Length: 419
Ligand SMILES: *Cc1c(COP(=O)(O)O)cnc(C)c1O
Image 1 (tube, rainbow, N blue to C red):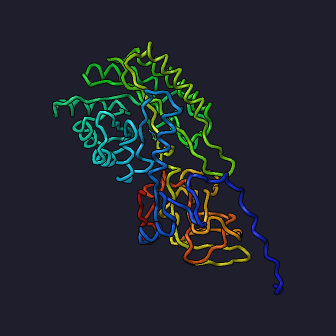
Image 2 (image 1 turned 45 degrees about the vertical axis):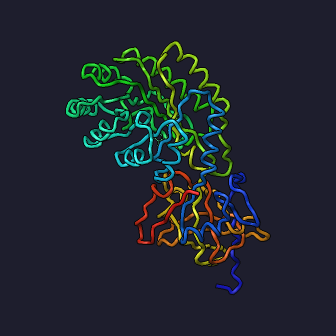
């Protein structure tokens, strides 16, 4: 060992497209119009998630402007089930999609219109199906078993069982972060088994309303989304010939992605709007009673949210700066790269109270957990930060708190606010 051992200068990570949804004033990020330090004082502790009502409303309005009138927008609340946020969204969108009886309860408390709530997900328990029938919501059936159980429940409760058939299509959404259709899947009923299930729905006298197709998630390629929508429409039209009643509800899925990583470009809505207009025009004659629905989670809420953690310690190890924060993968598994990413990439990050820094350095942001997986930003160019400064992770409104293992390692849970 020599005393002059050379330390490698850390190589900075690729740079993200600038995040412009939150304005900056006097060097501070404004969330819901509040400077980040004031918001942190109002919340009273870190770490926290904050969701901006103005941005949520703007996103719904932008989507309505880009898509033809009459296309129903459903919020898939799995992306962010915070009750106050679901209540806010319920007032903006046409329907709420739930994936458990727990989510159903939140949606009903939020004031969602029961006629426009639908319940999808594999392995629905009998008790959950009973709750759904009693509530009067639409059940997207995912197996012959659910059809048989619903018939018994409808009879016992003397209520109609409203059903749509969730189809596992024979194609996938190309270029998706997560594929949820095509090939063998636990989701939905294989297209070739659907006619038999439709016949059974007719025999049992369930209230058939239509079809649900969901081919994938987090897609930034408009042409792939259009292709999946067209194939979904064609498949539903073929299957409708075997249905016991006209199609009133046709959920073409969603999959609209948001830019998370360097090189990601926002989704171009114009071709999707044109494609949906063409499908709607065809439906006027081919399925005249059908409403076309798209269901979106992260596209509605992802960009409206941030995760905020405070720097606790600043360390330099072999030439590399580490900002150790009070937050980490236990609150934000997605940003750590451990929620469905194949190769870890950084989310966009900023020091929220030094958003227009005079001085930058390459820093690595980590949490307090004793695992190298607890990495929030790997060698990013950030403002020179000290203990007390606020690390802000953008694009954190979806699959954040509820998708993270909060109990792992026994640190305090995080909180969340809607501003
Ligand atoms: C997860 C899921 C969604 C939401 O996906 P996003 O990528 O958040 O838009 C919508 N529908 C179904 C059936 C899902 O499972």
